Image 1 (spheres, rainbow, N blue to C red):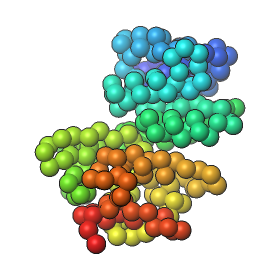
Image 2: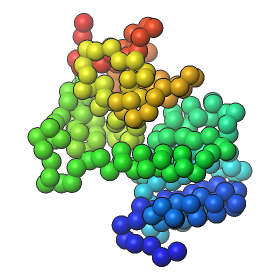
Image 3: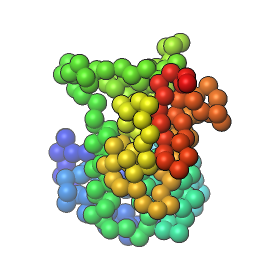
Image 4: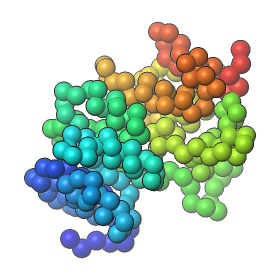
Length: 243
């Protein structure tokens, strides 16, 4: 396949060669450069040889599984990660999100939904404005406890200059909360504000990301004061953790 320099590069890692071939053909028809691999070794070779924008990663592979590879990707880079899980494995989806995946999709899936989710993750990853073209609002920094959320760099910066990288979905969720201080937001509102989709029964992705954010910003994550649970309603962001 002939690729243009500006094509987003998607890597599909799955031990099912038919799935890889089908996804490669479909995404290729929609303007993506696609490389496939059957496991961790292949993924590392691809990462060493070329720029990658997003990895579509099967969780249930023999040998080095998708959770291990998701952790590796999160430790090494800010590359987007979309995990593929079994339809009957909600626990896998939760664990995948906990280790830093940006989104998930259950097998079997409609390739149109895969395409939509890939585009959504890429939009979030590319949301930071081009250097030198920021407006005052885009360069805004929001105080969060002892941290500052920089909307341009997509980083949490502590008072000791410590920088904490966020996944694209963590950033979008924290920004949505921070831009509505002292307001109770339902899960449905947060999914719409942060991820542009509606809440579905048993969808715990917001709760998983809230837990991850609390571990990063709360002095005591077990007794949160910045991102508070409002029983029966949703969550409320309190910038200074007081009151």
